[in-house]
Image 1: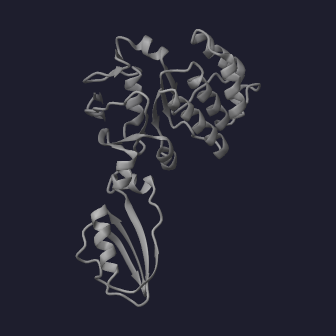
Image 2 (image 1 turned 45 degrees about the vertical axis):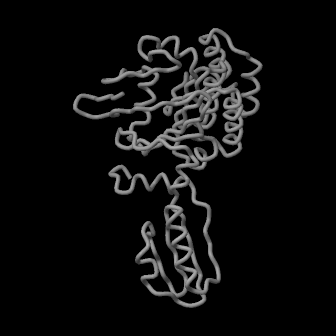
Image 3 (image 1 turned 180 degrees about the horizontal axis):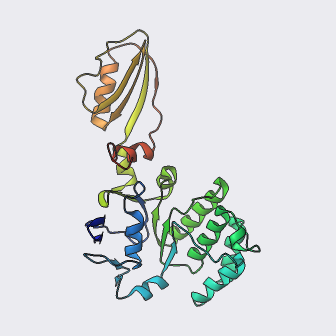
Length: 291
């Protein structure tokens, strides 16, 4: 699917399949097209080209039926400021045709949501809790969550992750847009990476990490030549100071060659912390004008 705004490109030729029962992370810098993609999936805006199918239904023709089966948390959450939290949740429950209110009260308790004060007086984090509850409250088949932990403290984030695990255990599907790499790494099965409106990669988390940039710091007994890694591919950011060498290595084959090279000298210490998804993600955007 594509969405253009006049001559301006929003998203272009997004060809993406999300499987039932998986948690899919949708990643990209601000302005890359994440929210446009989500709004097109939900038929808030119509695609300029192509089509979207959700649960076997057409996103335009069957949007009402689709919305019954989706829980959605927008990235820019707007709530009724004069209502208190409880009245808002009851209103949303009625729109859904009724929900298990015991489940709602359980989420209110677990998230420590504020439901007695006017929503307009609440902090961003407390508004976000209400947004999460309304998205989960009707036990949807699909959850579409745009930056769901924005404004939440670490303890509430942990509770949210438990909620997602329960959804996953029920074989429901989650489509998650987030910029928090540790969160994506912990809860997602696959990720899609979007850049300037184009989908540039779809990877399993384990496959993406296999492409990791490994940061390594080696302490030698004596100083080593400045060109120690000159003939090795996929070795970058080499820094040599006295008898300490820092470098980044990508690819398992390169790592083998790297180790064989340093073994020619007396090594006293090696530090190689586990690479995180953020480093891998940023490697896709080197030189991006949106950086």
